[in-house]
Image (cartoon, rainbow, N blue to C red; front, side, top):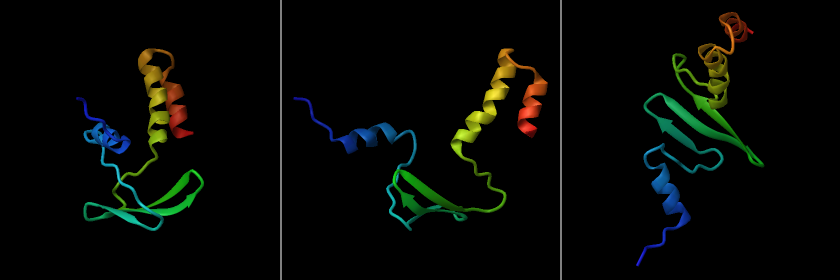
Length: 92
């Protein structure tokens, strides 16, 4: 007889090796190491505003920006663009 897993159990199994998944309410924080604090600053509809307090030497970027910055580099590697295009996009 096969056991039936709840949706939360399935999600937990999937995410176990991928990343830590936490649930937070407005105003609650997450501490990362000794010097980084992440706070749920606002919730409006399906948008969540996150406040991050971290030392100046910690690089923080939105994930979709990493993907956009890599696209011109991938174009050069694949031969679809020249290096001047990448330089222009990075500086612009």
